[in-house]
Length: 312
Image (tube, rainbow, N blue to C red):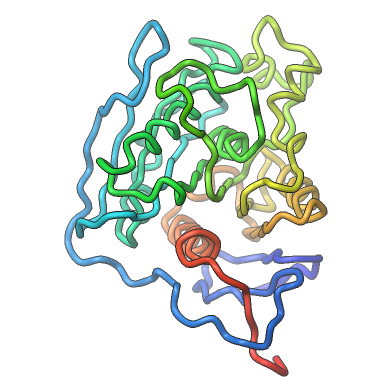
């Protein structure tokens, strides 16, 4: 394993090496004590229950649907996880994150994989409107889902990672009217896997299609997560490959540095030799699930100071 020596919690991983527990070293958190427990690596016995085609909102023209992944063992006040698929905002569907939904449910999360309007159906900000509607629906239906409304995390890859980061932003005025007005769409933590973090006008055909006819530099800035990197942003884990030719990993590096400078709890994990969409490969996907589980456990499920032994 080759470690990139950069400030903060940045690691470089190889897919053919087993993932061990991160060192848990973060800024200003050394207390000389070891935090016990909290790591959710024990799989729950039994089978994950999947409920497909559940309506969570509406656009005015059609219903918006999601798939729900429930842990094998029933419980209350579990952490929730909203999963958002990628596909350059113009393709893909919620079934793409089935692996993540099942694996995260096996360690105790209730997963909700949502659809959103693609750019061919509606331009920005329809996409953020729809995923915010999904998160509001989760919070409004927390009792039915068996989740803690204060412990809803979000994750996504590629375009879905962009939207996951946007859910972490203070984006007043981008709620939309997809349902459950007045319910908060704030999330507890974010995982973004190879995310575009700065949208550019007239620089990229895919991004121009997202922005639509009303596209401008101002609209592109509104759609850029890095513009919202400031204090108050939820804890964030960024995962990227350093051989990504579609979304260069400097998108994640820039977001990491902006959040770190703002004092946000953030980690960046770089997979050596990994291209775009690397997590479709089993070894990569398995390690991503472990990274996400560890981070969400530490920041949301069992939060507490990050500690190391005295003299370490």
